Every structure is written in C-alpha cells, then in structure tokens.
Length: 407
Image 1 (cartoon, one colour):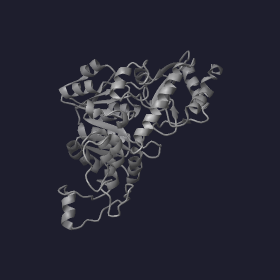
Image 2 (cartoon, rainbow, N blue to C red):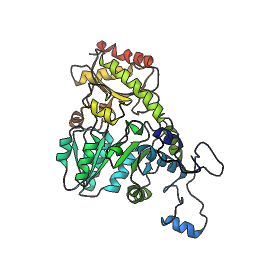
Image 3 (tube, helix red, strand yellow):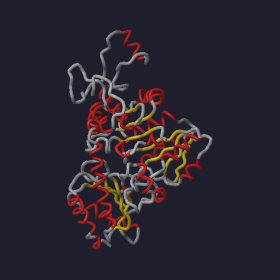
Image 4 (spheres, rainbow, N blue to C red):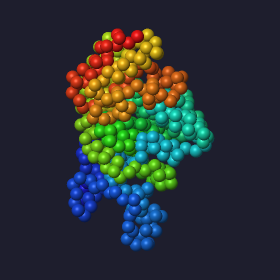
C-alpha cells in the first residue's frame, strides 16, 4: 500500500507487508476490500478500449478486482516473478495452467508423489482430452530425463511433496525441461516463498494453494500461479476470463492479510515441527518419520540448500504394525485419541492438523498408485501449528502410548 513506487531491493518480509495497489482517495492504511461485480466506466470510448484490452482499467468482476490485484502483486513480489494470477483454489490454479498451456497430443511429466487430486486431474481427467502424461519418481532425476518425449510441454513437481515430504532438485528439473523446450512448474505449497523461491532455481511457473500457509488460519479457499508477465497476460488471463475460475475479493483480502505474517508463522511452525520430528523418531511406536529437516531424510542436504536451511512445518510418520490392516487400525487409534489437536485434512493452519492420507487426500488413488507413492495405511500426516510444544506432544502420546491395546 503506497502512493509511490516502492524502492528496489526490499526484502521479502517487507514486500509481504507493503506490496499492493495504491491507496484510494480515502488514504486507508489497511488494504481496501472492494466488493463489487461491475465497474462504472468514465466514457463509452474508455469502456470500449478497456474491454478491448487497449487501456488499463477494471471492467467486470470476472476479469479483475483491485483487492485481487493486490494479492497477485504481493505474492508475485514475494516469489520473485513478474506477475501472478489468482484463482478460486489450488486445484483451480492447476486446471488453469493445464488448460492454458496444453492441447491434445501434448505430454506432461509429473511426480508420482504429488497431491492425489493433482495426479488424478493430470493423469485421468486431461487424458480424456488427449493430453498424455507420465508419472515418475520424485527424486530420480534420470527418470525425469528418460520420460521426456518430443511432445513434452510441461514438467510438474511438488517439493516437498504431500505427504511424504520428498524433495526434488528444482535446478536439475529446470535444466531437463528447458533442454526439451518445455516448462517447469513447481508446487510451492509446503515451503512457500518464506523458505523457497523456485524461480531462482530455474522454475518457470510457481503454483500455490493459498488455502494453506498463505492464508494461515484455515479460513478461505484460494490459489495462484506465479509466472512471467507475458504468460499471465497472453496465456492464463484469456482462459480465466472465459472459464471463470476467479478468486473472490473477500478471499483475496483474507489471504492478502495472511501473507503479512507468513514469514514469522512458518518459521515458528517449522521450528516446532523439527522438535516434534526429532521426538517422534525416538518413540518406540513409530517406525519412521518423514521430515526434510532431519538428517535421516534421504534428500536432507538438498532440502537444506533449497529451503533456506529450514525443513518446513509438515511431517509424516508411520506407526509400527504387522500388516496393512493393523497399521490402519493403529493410525486410526492415534487420530481418534486426540483431545487438543485436530483431525482435519487441511494444512498450513495455526492449529495443528493431522490426517490419514491413505483414506483422505490419496484415498481415490488405486492401491498400486498409493504403493508407488509410498502411502501406507499406517501413515499419519502432521501439519504443525502454533500450540505449545508440550501440549502437542502430550496429545500425540494419548494414542501412541496406548497402541498396545490395538491388535
């Protein structure tokens, strides 16, 4: 919010508070929430020029809104991209990207460890329109390279992944994509620009589910694509105008204000997540902990380089069990024993949230797909909030310390 252009070289923490459209004539300090579906035009000629794209100006709620613009400008500034396009949800952002950049006969390579809905959308839904795809190991650079075809147009990775926190080498994938004449999109939902800026490592597009850490309090749905200005203007905007997967002004305002505290929230939550991950590694009922901030994580060194030396606020762990049926029963016992923390499939909230991926986020995948992604029945995802560490641990122990009662 400024009446003049911000100086160059500001830190992301400052951009997260100050980047927005100009103040109105009323001089508001907090960014204004513009709730309107239409805009009064100064003249018929100006209206014609604006609708033709020959003059800047808002015309209709589906094609632009000042509050939404503020969110887009702020997120782009934090990610280090020229522009951003806001959408109604994270999945709407994926849909917008695919509709804008792909056509029948094109080929997409994506991680087999991605969010379940993303895998279904690309691997199944877009296949109906002739878009081909190949899923590969998140961490195997050679597998990504081997999957490239002459028709490959897009590589899509999520890092860290949901829920196993696998980390991909963004720079290596960018090199593969660009040598093939393709684009690299990175889902930066878990790390956010507070920890990781994929474009500095070569990514072309950064995708966000603003529903998660960007909002930070589990209030609204939102999504975004951060990309070069020409791509946003010439590729994304025309499709969004016709398809209408727009972000509401109210939701944009909520996430816009959430961005102001993103850095301090995520760093505090990440510190707590590291403490809990270390603690869970020592618990006799836990067979394995998946967290990029632990030296035991297979991509620990890469994660520390890419994520500013911080592991993020999401981890997963497997409970010990003899077979899949017992693993599911034991995981459910831990979740049903909670009295303080929440059983909830969202993440990025100030409240600590736990989920059972095999029956929720990845429940619609085939068993073969779940096995390929490493999603077992005993896996629990834990998105760390801002409660006191002692209270988080005590609540987890209600289930972990009573697992012997589960056959």
